[in-house]
Length: 376
Ligand SMILES: [Zn+2]
Picture 1 (cartoon, rainbow, N blue to C red):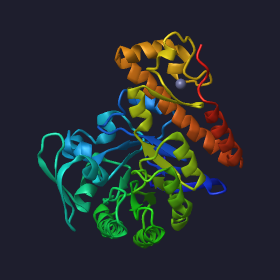
Picture 2: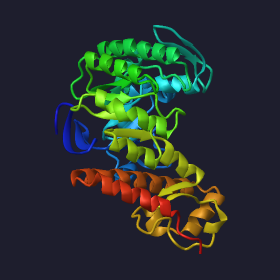
Picture 3: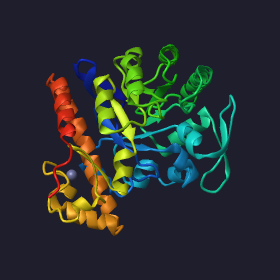
Picture 4: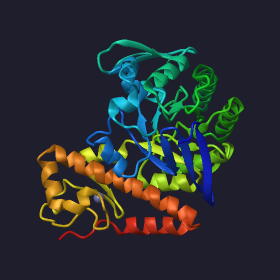
C-alpha cells in the first residue's frame, strides 16, 4: 500500500488517456466513473454490490452530510468510510454546488455562503475554511475546493465574477487544507462557456498548485455541444501529469465524449437515479421498463450483460416489480445501470491501452443507433 497520493499516467490515444490514482485506501483506475452516495449510501445498493459493479471510488455530498447526520457525528463514529461500510477511496464535493441548487435563502459574500437547510430551515454557513474542515471530519480521500458555480445562462460579467471569487476561495481552500499526506485537494476550473475565462481560471489554479483539477460549471443546462466545445480546449490548459475530473457528467455518450477529450474522472447521479425511475441504459440505448411492451417479455434487459438483473430476471419480471413499486425494482435496475456504466469505463480503458479508441467509440455509437431489441 502506498503512503501518499499519486497519479500515474498510463497509455494515451489521441487526447484520451488511462492511468491509476494511488491512495492509501486503494487504487482508482482511470478513466473512472464515480457512483454518487449522496447521504452516505448509493441508494438501493449495498456497498459490496457497488464494488462488484467495478467502481473503485464513490462520491459523497458535503452539503447533505453536514446537515444530516452532521460531519461531527460521522467523525465521532470513525469517519465516513467506516460509517457507510465503504473502505475504498471516497471523493467529497465542497457543498458549494448544492448550496446553490438546493438550499433556501442564500446570502453570498466574499467570506462564503450563509443559507437555510432544505430539511428543517436551520441556518448554516459554508466558507472555504468550513468546507475543508467538514471534508476532513468526513475523512474524504479526495477533497474539493469550495467554489461558486453560477447557473447558466448567465452574463459574461456574472460568470467572470463567480470564477474570480472561486479562484480566491481556491487559494483559501488550499491554505485551510494544509499538509495531509495520503489525502488530495483538487482545484475547480470555472468560467462557463467562455474560453478566455476558462484559461484565466486554469492558470490561477495551476499557480496555486493542486493534486488534481476539476472542470466545474458544465452539465448545468448548456447542452452537449457546448460542453464538448469547452472540453476541446479546457483539458489542454491543465497539467498533463494530474488527474482531470469533469463534475456531474453524465449520460453514456457524454462520458465517452469527455474521455475522448482528455477527462480522467466523472460522477453523476444519472445511473442510480434512473434505476429508481425505471429508465435503463443498455448498449442499445435507453429503454423504459414501465412500458407495456415488456410485460410478456421473457428476455433479459441486455443478453450480453453479466449483472444480476440481466442474468437472473426477465423484462417481464422487472416490469412487474416496477409497476408494483417493489423495492427490488430499484435494486436491480440501479445495479444494472451502474454495471453498464462501469463496463463503458472498462471498455474505454482497454481500447485506449490498445490504441483503438476511435474504433471502440464508433462501435459504441453504432450499437446505440440500432435501438432496443424488437418487441416480441
Ligand atoms: Zn445488466
